[in-house]
Length: 244
Ligand code: UDP
Image (cartoon, rainbow, N blue to C red; front, side, top):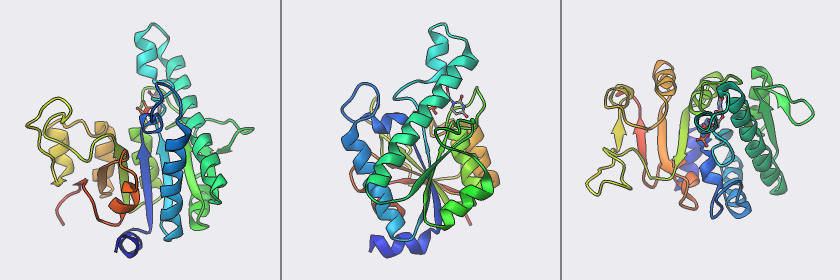
């Protein structure tokens, strides 16, 4: 059921994963077992014919805001954060290719010896050919997190939906890890997310998705097999979109 549903629902999607998703059992960096599992789920999606683009965060290595709080110049710190996202992207590219799935890292900062530059039409072409495209280095600008480039690339690529994988299975009324009374929303409008100040994604990312009418699906990436399940419409998640 899941399989046919996935292709029926979506032709092209963008998956945003925080760097923490790659931590697994590690305190820092990348857990190779988790990386392989996530790569396997992405491969399964592409084998169904869904075109997959990805934005990975860098929080498992460096976050600019944290480095700045410790006294580093903010722009330098954000450059380090952006490079951290490229490191994650290279790791995922490698894991995908070791499973026989073609992937391309495209960076918003020029690091030609390491990966391709981000060129929109080229990225679209990769997707059309069934290659997974992993966008690195965020927007290429400091003072952003990777939420905004995830929304930006989803809009630029003409994606049907943005899938945000987190450590919880959707958007809650309060932090479910702290408040036992927190309830999960099945569906929310973009405006509700903004006005209730729900911590789903940066407001700039929500607004960009609203203006381009691209639904956001928030799901847990911690649960094995969930990416495929949720793209197929099964399992537990929160959808953010406006009523049709
Ligand atoms: N970053 C940036 N500009 C961007 C995207 C990211 O400067 O357009 C930097 C910023 O320092 C950020 C870091 O890259 O903290 C890693 O991204 P993020 O914090 O979103 O990682 P996540 O929390 O998703 O793991």
